[in-house]
Length: 454
Ligand code: PLZ
Image 1 (cartoon, helix red, strand yellow):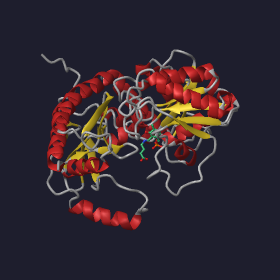
Image 2: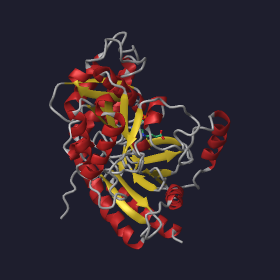
Image 3: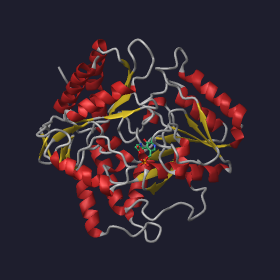
Image 4: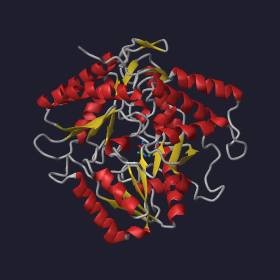
């Protein structure tokens, strides 16, 4: 007997058939024409994962300019969690755009901004008094979290972890671990950023979460001095770093150390937040109440919005006028966030994420039996990845990850890679991904393993 009552079974969403159907090669002729124009018009620095141009999307599929219908296992990097063009998001956006598109909240405010902050203060971990501030991108939220932590503590040092990712602006590039493609030739980076070990269970051998945290803490104490540290910024599940789930105890030990030493503990939940992992925020799995939390991506169903939410005393320590930006908390983006959050609350979003996990994990474990290149299967909810190694070793196999990615793309499944060594294959389906498409995506992956095995 199955009780997957919340799991999407729809074969049509917003009038779009939920099907994988290829009518041309990928990229087809229309996309090829657009790619040629892209090469002439768009900076070569802006890369593309899957070279096909999208004209429509709904639920769990993307339709391209040639009429191909692709299963979207990436959600635009964990953004369209409530499904692409979710009707509640679209309705909110349309109504708000028809009323007014912009005033600048710092010039003349509007209610939507306050409503989003109220929702964030209510939904983020902890029942303490909180305040929020809204921005445009994840990187901007992280930058502001650091600004606020520095203003509150009067300290400068920022501690981040190995494999961490926090953005592409100057400060957040410095906070990001991986050089290519994010940092190469873009320095110098901001000072006062220090990197400490992360618990990485697949690679740590017998060392547990608390043990690795103790190394990190000792490094902070001996090399920086705890009293010089303004903030420790960590993703509870590392996103771009390869969906590393730190061993139990690591995240909590780091939070406890921060909180015992007057350091602001910032959970970067930009990728892991908003029901992605089967909980509103992944920090909850570790029993951690962060002092501050950064969010973006899934918050607004595809519209650009980001936030910093934190303890009222910390958030209110900044001088009036110290935080802001022309577009931060744009009214249309706020309306999208309110639609997205309302959908999550009304549709058992966390249960849907857990069901996605319960379908994907057994399929991936089955594949691992025949394909020992799958060294590790990890993640939570609708944030699942496999790490590829040369069989029988711990040596990363980025070529295999790239080959699998290519196969999936050519067969109508949008997939993403990740990881410092490029050897992680990650899945971020929307929570409305119909079950039949999720199963089909797993079958295509299985074919990809067969087709790419030596
Ligand atoms: N913090 C944890 O995952 C964005 C980056 C894709 P922005 N991750 C996707 C790319 O190649 O640029 C991210 C994140 C975490 C911060 C960010 C930054 O968010 O909205 O991309 O600025």
